[in-house]
Length: 442
Figure 1 (cartoon, rainbow, N blue to C red):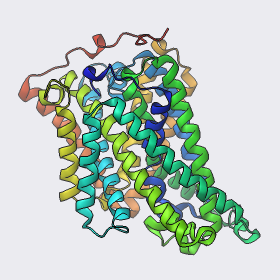
Figure 2: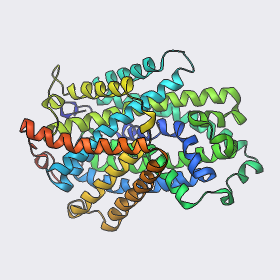
Figure 3: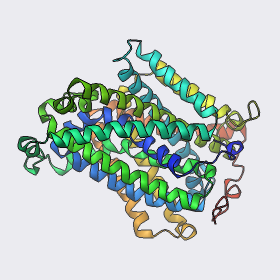
Figure 4: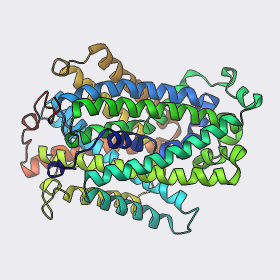
């Protein structure tokens, strides 16, 4: 949470939980069937490629987060890289809007699985999960971290049960489904990797908690690298388990239920229910972690002068009004907008933001001490995945491409219009963090 919550520090386990919770969310449960349409039985390879790109991006985020440990995360990184101008402001807003849409998608995913247990309208479930985790985040970063840790541990245990059962039930016929002879061309595999990036982007949320860490220079790298590594391994094992347990023709038509159906051959109906529970926990923890990170982003943007003062104004003696505004915007999307048409916006939007952060990082690489080739590789990899995913969106789901373009344009227009109307300018983010500041980490 914002500055007033600094007394509640986040340790390594909670930071790992934020990253893992932000990554293993709705993606692994909702997009497997969609990705199977484009990458086929090469689904594990698409996960590996997307994970590799996430690892490259993580390198830059570690270097930037250690040098500039603030709650602003990538907002701070953008301003550091591009200066206090329109470009950094617009990309910051674009990222904030992307987080809002992502939270709404996670809440909708939660509603779908919750309704299989208790039949209530989807909107009721979606609104409820947002309100519950708004309350948890309001109670403070320590409560948020503990809640996230518990949720992550439970869902990882369930996924571990699935992985063990799936590999125990392996047959020669199942293994044969992984044969490269049945893989699509490179375009399909890389498109799948682009679609899957939404399942990895959550590691960036850890940098938003840097200001709440007792020793960010030590905790931040371990949390980011550790969470990315954990998630890559889990995704690879899960994707292999799914492909080997479900024939490709069936897998392509399963949609949201792909992982749950894949548990049936080895675990029966109990396995289906277990995965449904894991899906509930995953989507819930993703709402929790992403709400925490996006609220900090909104707070930092407001402190910079790019959002109305309400986002950084105190309420009941605490900097939480931005949390309530963010939650309110999420509820607007949940209640009023059909989100299925913009599902791929999550991956595309974050790929573009991560590429922008990489380019900005290259401009200030002397301050962070990061290696230029790795920074360039990170930005280039993100842009390649973005370009291929955008091509797929234009050809297969033009409404998603249009929505992405509108969101980006609106971000620039809002940035320009708000500055002109309000007269607000940056308050000097470059003075808010000191390169090498470590929050007591010696």
